[in-house]
Image 1: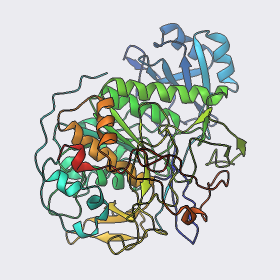
Image 2 (image 1 turned 45 degrees about the vertical axis):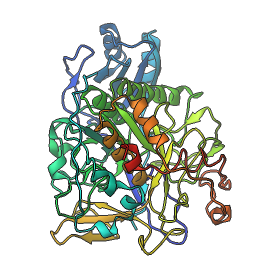
Image 3 (image 1 turned 120 degrees about the vertical axis):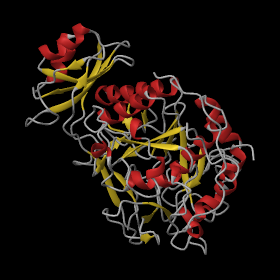
Length: 511
């Protein structure tokens, strides 16, 4: 995933930056679900900033909404289920004025300048009853290039269970190209949305992917078995594009909160998250500003989980040990980074939020990819994300993962199917996470719906993998942020590089 996490690419490897920006938003909802008169569009006025306002208890009262207006702000979206409001203001010192005016506020923080860019290599609704998945045997035109699927036994799994059409995976990303021939048959238009700017917008033009990253992750999850191009892990399930990253690939906190609230409110059973949500790469809970944003995002994730959504997240591409962070030299990455000493009080969202299935990346030689972040407690399983330096093989000739791609988006390693459909090779933990999200969708298609049970099934059926026998191969790739050497802690049953092991689609569905 790109930062989604910055991929340091020695030996001249290319990196694609993906970031977040706010955009003009449609009418917002108040705490009681009624339309709020915003009085301004997102970022319409010079100096206007977006704020995450966190309340001490769930609920956003009318008095609190009035306090926002009195302090010089405008509520553009309220989430009373988790006690969070998205507010805009062009008043200097608005956050301090609002806290002084309303004692129910736990924290208020501007999200201006706080975003994370995705950089992969490109050089409360009730859950509906689930119809069990049907088989999807056979291959499509580019099957010979899908070493990653063979590695996790996805073709064997889908020959038994290709997923259910009543299962929906929300791909929280840069949107998806709903016109792509391999995605179009499976796109759920009714549950796709743009959250850029913090307010849901269901217009398909708003959640169209002009970046490419979201289309790539969506293809790995659910490219159709249709004789064209590639086949996803779960080719029968539906895919919803939840656009939280703008066309530059930045994921602002208001968009991340919106995305999880949307998933939890619209019966989406699985989400894939191939990004990091800022304000900082490591978001420190002992800092008042960062804590407000971290807590708002955590509440939104918990809301989705409590409503039946299994959440999968990529670990990052900085070669960092997330269990032992000491320094962040990356954040904020869309302005001027500031070197910070950090501790375990600082966490990465969403991968380090409790209950999230964290995913590291490996290549075709079955060792952790040179760039992949890792960490005991942060990584649940490992999955193919590609490795262009340490793991080029006869099957993976360039080491990278192939998936769907918008034809107009730049791609350094493009493949055109005989049908004319476009695909692209990328590497990153962004590519690993969608494999696990696809397997989660297959598990849900067997009738298992509780997120904790889905995670347990994925963990217990993974192929156990020990720490690499030769750690010297990682010597040229120390952690991006603190320069520490990569260290694998644990044994074959569980370790910081591989978690519980490599995800196995066939075993996960009981095959």
